[in-house]
Amino acid sequence: MIIEEEDPLGPLDPKFAEQFERDMRRPPCQLYLISPADVTGGFDERLRRAVGTGFVAAFQFRVKGIDQHEAARLAEPLQRICADYETAFIVNDSIALAKRLGADGVHLGQDDGDPREARSVLGPNAQIGVTCHDSRHLAMEAGEAGADYVAFGAFYPTTTKEVRHHPDPSILSWWSTMFEIPCVAIGGINAANAPALVKAGADFIAVCNAVWGAGDEEAAVKALADAIV
Image (cartoon, rainbow, N blue to C red; front, side):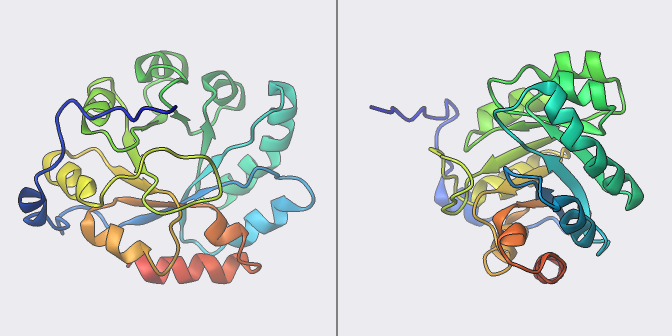
């Protein structure tokens, strides 16, 4: 049986949450693209079409179940494409792989290491993100540990990964009102449901299947970019 962990800060009071809306002094929301599990078979050209639109701020290399040598082999051409289009290249989970590649940053799950460790290994300019699920407590801990962004989700049903946490969008409003560190919204997001998360306060919208499952990466990215303006 899975027991959900409660946020020690307690749930947001709905009336308190309703008074929040996007702080328009924050920078415009941007697109954060996550790789599919399979990045072989011509994926490099698919990525080029996506980031070539100019609307993708960051790309996360998220491939599981392979050793670091193979991961590096798959990542290197994708990293070069991101560099060509000034898109940040972020490695999922592995501080060691991010170091090996000289990646722009690393995204850490709750069991993937401490932001302080990542900072000591990757240096002061690395972008370090932390998955915080639906927890304000975890997000504040990540911020105190030096994270450059925190990620909340999954906001909507997703087939990309198994999830147990489903935050209310008001957590984005709370975070963006209280803290300057950017927040990322993730989980089942597409062009239709993204605007609500942008309005709530998301600084980045993270998507995977909405682009790679669309059949036309360029059109899908442009549709998302239009939706989050």
